[in-house]
Image 1 (cartoon, rainbow, N blue to C red):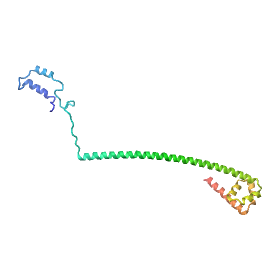
Image 2 (image 1 turned 45 degrees about the vertical axis):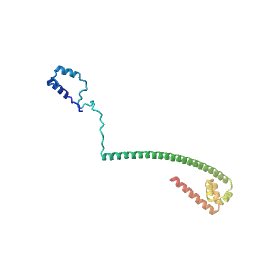
Image 3 (image 1 turned 135 degrees about the horizontal axis):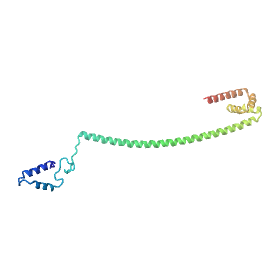
Amino acid sequence: MKAVSRSKPWIILGLLVTFGTAAGPAYGMNSVKGWINNVRPGTFATEGDATADTGPQDPETNFSEADLKVLIQLKQREQELAAREEEFSKRTGELKLLSQQIEQKLDQMRSLAAKIEQTRAERKEMDERDISRMVKYYESMTPDAVASFINQMDRVTAMHLIMRMNPRKASGVMQLLEPKVAVDITERVTKFKANRSDLVAK
């Protein structure tokens, strides 16, 4: 039933005072005032009153076919995005693990390279000591004996011995070498020094 508007109760009361009802005569003003004073609040609901009790409202929501299609597409899109996000998180974790493994391998390679370099330096130092001892040994021999040994050596070893020997003693040995051996050693020494100079210049 529609609630009575705010103005209608006063109209009805005025009619009661003026004309009365079919059941009896018109009411006096004092009677009407007494009746109004006994009216409980909320007896007459006002139109547009948000607090008025209009009964439970449960309107049925209707969606068109186009709306349903849009909702279905949005739901599918949401599921796809969730699946992609899960896959992305999985791939991110795999890449992070792979990066850690690569870094560990690099650390192992750096450590191995450092050990190799250390071993190489130690070996070079030992070779230098051995060559130095050998040079001193040959320098203690007579030039004839040294020339005899060098004539039978491989040219690389002979070259390093001659370069490390005292220049005066090396000169005396070179004079006693076989001409072919002396020429070969001289050429090797010249190329070696030229290459070393090029490397230093670069």
